[in-house]
Image 1 (cartoon, one colour):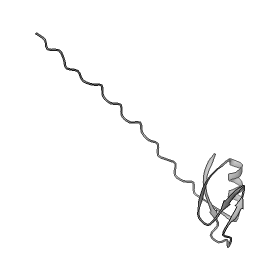
Image 2: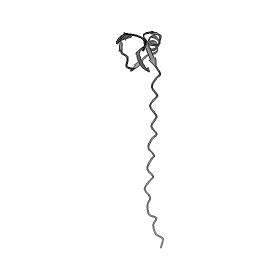
Image 3: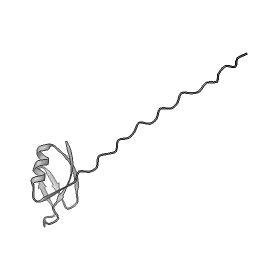
Length: 76
C-alpha cells in the first residue's frame, strides 16, 4: 500500500470531486491505495497528487540499563 496526499487541482472550479471511491476537495487528503489505484489517481487531470508524506522516523531502541554493581567482599 502507498500513502498519497491528493486534492482537486487548483485550476479546477469544482469544490468536490469523486474518483476511485474517494471524495476529494481543495484540501489535501491523505489516503492509502494499492498500485493500480495510485496509477489511476495520478493519471486523473482533475486531481493534484502531492508528494508523499515523509516516512515516520524510526525510533531507536532505548539503551539497556547497566547491571547493578555489587560491592566487592573485603579481603581479610
